[in-house]
Length: 356
Ligand SMILES: Cc1ncc(COP(=O)(O)O)c(C=O)c1O
Image 1 (spheres, rainbow, N blue to C red):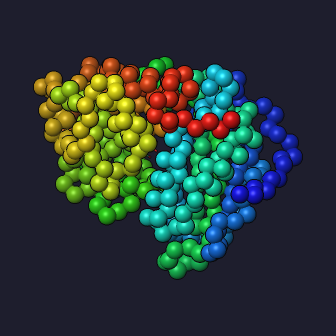
Image 2: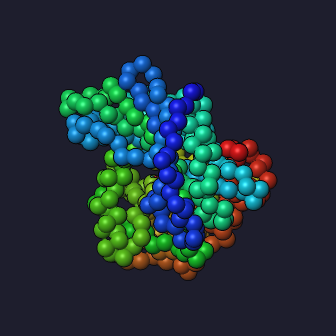
Image 3: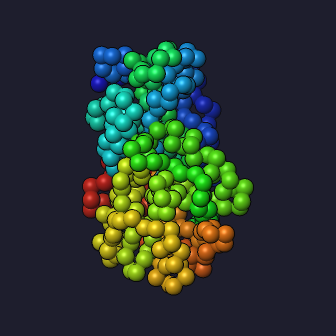
């Protein structure tokens, strides 16, 4: 791919790295962005240029019919000063599945990866070197055609922006509290739940607001049909240590195919815990907490890697998990995954991609 480049007039004075471990999520951005457009005859005009506002007509498809998909990844700096990505081809594949579902043109995997790598090489100084901090990557595709008819856009924009971020946990692991909504659902059968598209997140905001107003940090989503089976937690996949097995809801169209989830499932047998993917009812979770069969719950996703759960509100009361402490399996998966991501441990699975 022949990427054109526009230089920035003046680089930002100093990356905001006085205290990288306290960088907020997604508020500071680097100097450059990648863009590429599509108007019926394939992806064209790849460009790395100064980060700038987009100019779109108010009638652009994305504002009205939400043809929008995105990805979330991180670049890590190793002790040897390498820039590392974690399973980036999985993100490229998931982006293409999301694009297909939203009737948008796919991006060849190699093109996606080259765009990310070229931007990251240019923005190397923005990748924090402290373990726990990283450079968050947000590839996004939007429908840009200026037309109000309800149909797929004939024009698209692909862009990548980068944001240095601190760790999700500032003082080690803090178990989060969950609120089970008996009103709202995140995704229904045949819908767009397994696509990473903005509408899914817009639809989840009201439930999250109610949860936080009640003093809980995340929503535990149940299935839309019976409102009984556990699906995801906030924007993470969920795991239970139940009867000595690692149990997670099976993917069935409504759950995002998390790359952290996939990695946890692949690591589990090596770490000595059998995995089970199946439906799991909220009653089984609550009973397990009280009869001692369920010893740990944790979420898994790129932002937090592993997030232990200490409390679930269901049926009008709080149910405390593992005495509201981080459990040994959450610790083990967190240490193993971050060890691989920062290049500290052997990469037996070939998951690490060296940008440079
Ligand atoms: C709804 C939802 N589920 C799960 C995940 C976890 O996916 P991953 O591990 O690929 O970050 C995310 C975050 O990307 C998400 O937004």
